[in-house]
Image (cartoon, rainbow, N blue to C red; front, side):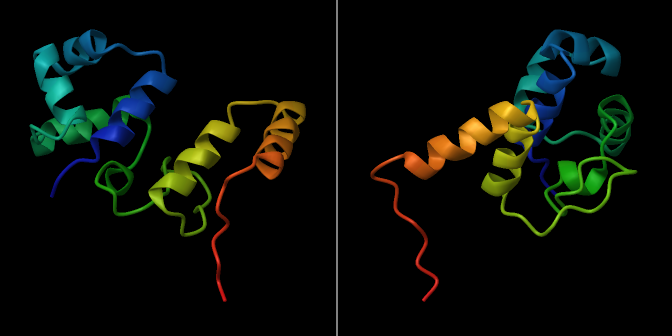
Length: 117
């Protein structure tokens, strides 16, 4: 099963870890990290287990089987990858900034709303 490289990259960046630092922690070359993130390479089971520990996440999240990012986290509602990314971005801001971002989205012109009818 393929690793979701975008999730790996996002978790790595959120923790302030460079590709070079992660490669050192995994005892592999930096180009392998780049390959994992862009989908060219698949990590071994041993490497995947180490990634999970370093990034404090779940195998299911890295493999795209679940949106539950952390082992002890409450399960997220069933979100698409784009919705999960939006939620992750929102959580980086304080309440006041989140409210301003919501207003901005509501005021943005030219966006097509999803028609559920």
